[in-house]
Image (cartoon, rainbow, N blue to C red; front, side, top):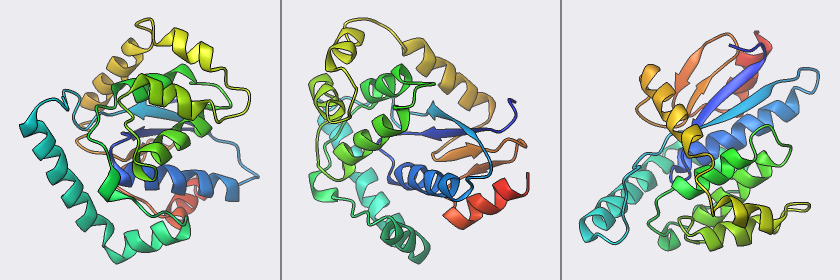
Length: 207
């Protein structure tokens, strides 16, 4: 593994992945004397999800109800409060996250990738937008300075970055990843599940 590289598997339908994303970035801001490269990886919780099928919509809604219960745990509630995050469960749209992950990979190794990931999570969990829709993704990323919507639109006219998603999910199988978030630290320590900002800082300071 590359020295000082952190790998984080996420899905844009996972509130815990959103929270872990925020916790990790807050932790990194606290460690200004150390430089880490973050590699965001795709793990679609439900890669074959089709929002035109009633039984799949029902399953999605059950997952939302389960997520609500998880977020009621005291530790998680404290984390949400720290970031001033209020998940808008009532307006979450049942969505396949494939196109959102393609957009994430389009900005791999780019200074804007963190901003891209953040606006996708915001669109899904806060603003109740359909992140399976390409037009939605183009529109929300246009809010980021120096992002050219035409570049994104052109990307969606191709099959680019589908192979990156497949590669990430194959690697997830090798690591026996069954849910997100899942993080691998530079020393190969792997954790499946949510970590607090303080827990991440402690892990990184011990490297």
